[in-house]
Image 1 (cartoon, helix red, strand yellow):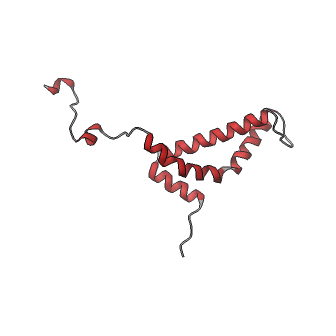
Image 2 (cartoon, one colour):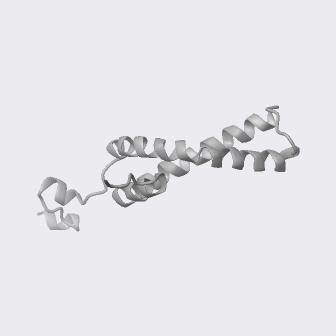
Length: 108
């Protein structure tokens, strides 16, 4: 019986397959969660044992850390969708099968 890969192992596989897109999706999710918790703490969400901006930032980081498994799962779901809608960075000559001239004067 094979062991199911952990969330971190699945994230590594996702990064190996999608590269920068997966990292970007993960970082955007992290920044969004961190910012939302930070704003919530500044707007009055009760936070025991800490006060001010520093306490709100620390509390936000802890809350974001607690949500890490959900963010990894969301990254795995969203990355293929995001990658599908990003423009491809392939060489135009490979996509069309025609070589593009490097110098416009070579077209004649």
